[in-house]
View (tube, each protein chain N blue to C red):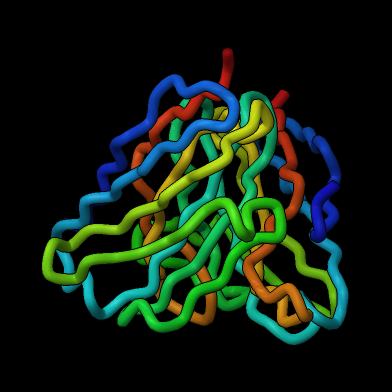
Length: 119
Length: 111
């Protein structure tokens, strides 16, 4: 079955960096686009970034453009999010998600990893 | 403020029907498929509807979706207490800042 497991979250100081990973299993990773989405405490979902199946097509939300970088390693079935210049408002649960069934949709989600930005 | 507009909350009694609206514009809902997600407390979101009105395997037909112009609607019939959750609409936005967008979420209370 499809499984997505995020890791790499934790406590980081403002201005610091963190790299999140998402380990995929149960499907042919290289066939699917992937995305990162976050959810601040008590808030709604915020889409962050998309990467195509080969890694050649990438999009970012304006809120993280220039600070966050998405990448993937199809040989390792892994998705990454490099987060730099972190701010207090980046505090959130970060989810990786896989394409579902149709146009743009997110059919499978990981359990999320918490990132806390605080001094 | 979210790109897609949803009501903050809706409520209905068990067994009743409820609808949740999602409003956008021509660069997002108007020209792209809409999906809907259910997020139960403390869990990751789950895909309920994709391509405006299709249900993934395992999603009961109590859940339905529709789209008209720049708006979409999620319908839930035969409400159950287990349906209490936050519901989000989502779609792709084809504007200059291309990317996915979500609604602000709607809290469903089953009275």
